[in-house]
Each structure stands twice: as structure tokens, then as C-alpha cells.
Image (cartoon, rainbow, N blue to C red):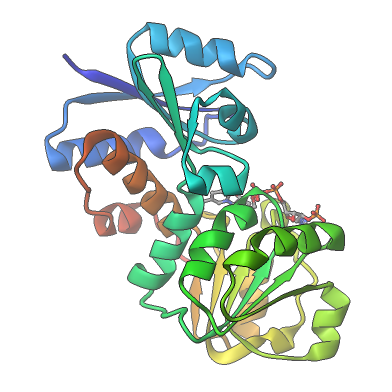
Length: 277
Ligand code: NDP
């Protein structure tokens, strides 16, 4: 029998997940159906129950339901627990297993696809929302020499720092955007995990943070040269990337978790890539 999976979000019209998972299924010979479900705000649990009753085996979860998915789960992975949010669910009997693959997908894209070694390098992370939180443990596991967190609301950067301090081996700190500008210090990797680009805005990131020859990574995808990537380009960053690779890699992680087989990702990333111009 064909196994059923879905992505749930609201809105959901923009989602690439059905295309990605259908391609993975063809490529690996897996017999699955994968739907897009527009979840009703305030009715996440009922929507998921309905899908489970219809034989659903697992779900990807996107905005704004990642916190509700976390609360709905019976079994949390360490990554989901630390992120305080879930982006993938697996249903087995009465149990609901939750994972958060966003940070793992992001890190895999940077380390494997972009071939950027984080170990021993200087990394700057902008933002302290859900995506930044998910990135914390996978980033720290790569053992950068230095990791600095910056957020517009500084108390959130500080809270993230306090939560993840026990996992840091290198130099780990947080600061405000104005302190970042005063420090005038370059970073080998600058990651924009703010949602500013979704509105065409630039987080107040000083030009001096981009080391020449460094990498600038924008988590938003499909938006071309965002104000953040433009600033990085103007400042001399050697490599620019958006979050399309992260999207495909986190999908591959869920696919493997559900089906026990790892799909190839490079072709899908190429298919979905929008030129950065
Ligand atoms: P959240 O809403 O949880 O967090 C948003 C963050 O952006 C906050 O830290 C907020 O700061 C900051 N921010 C928003 N606007 C500005 C601004 N103008 N200047 C400076 N900081 C700003 O969002 P998420 O963490 O869920 O998403 C962040 C980004 O990651 C989005 O672009 C999203 O599309 C992308 N994403 C990509 C994925 C992928 O697969 N490629 C997966 C998940 C997310 P403050 O705390 O001060 O409000």
C-alpha cells in the first residue's frame, strides 16, 4: 500500500516540499504519496489527527506550526528539544516522534555542498528566532573557533547564548548590532537567519564583518540577490548562497528518517536554484 506523508503550514501554496519528496521517492524507488495541507490556525492537532486517521505516516511542519508540532509530539529528539520546535513528525502506533532538521540541513549545505569547513573559523549568526535556534547545536558541533550571535532584540541573543553555552568549545559570545559595528571584526562565514529578506529589508549588518574570501549565507531562498547578499557582495565576500540547499537537505533528512534511504540532493538543489542577481 502507498504510504502517505504531507507538509502542513499556513499559507502553504508556495511549498516546494511535494515536488522535492516526489522526486526523492522516484529516485529511490519508494512508494509514497506526499500532499500539501493548509493547516487551520488554532486547529493544528485536529488537522494532524485527521491525517493520521487517513493513514498518514509522517509530516513536515512549516510556519506557523513548528511550536505546536513540538507540543503535540510524544517523543522529542535532542535537536527538537533544544530548538523548542519541530519540523518533522513520524507516526508509529500511538507515538508521535518529533525532529528538527532545519539546523542539520543548513549545516550540511554549508559544510558538504559549499565545502566550507566551519571548524576553526570565525562565524557570525544574525537573528535569534526559530531558524537560528535550530542552527545552534549543529553549528557548535562543527567547532568553529569563534561564534558570535547578534539580534535586533538583544535579550533574545543573550537567552540563546545562555541556553547553548554548555555546548560551546570555542570562543562563543553575543552582542548588539551597534557593538558589532564598533568591533569592526571580520568573519569567515556570516549567516543571515533573520526574516528581514522576506520583506526586502537589510538587517543592520556592518560591511566590515565580511572577511574577503569569506562566505555569506542567506536562509531565505528563491529571492535572488537579497539586500543582505548584495551587502556581502559589495563588501567582497567570495561566495554567496541562499537557503535552497538548506531546504532540500532538511527534506532529505526527513525522507531518510521516514524511509531509511538517503536521496541524492544535488540535482534537486540545481532544479530549485534561482540565480543570485
Ligand atoms: P522568526 O520569526 O522566528 O525570527 C525572525 C528573526 O529575524 C528574529 O531574530 C528577528 O529579530 C529578526 N529580524 C526580523 N526582521 C529584522 C530586521 N529588519 N532587522 C534585523 N533583524 C530582523 O523567523 P525564522 O527563524 O523562522 O526564519 C528566519 C529566516 O529563515 C526566514 O527568512 C525564513 O524564511 C528562513 N528559513 C529558511 C528555511 C530553509 O529551509 N531555507 C527554513 C526555515 C527558515 P527580533 O527578535 O528582534 O524580532
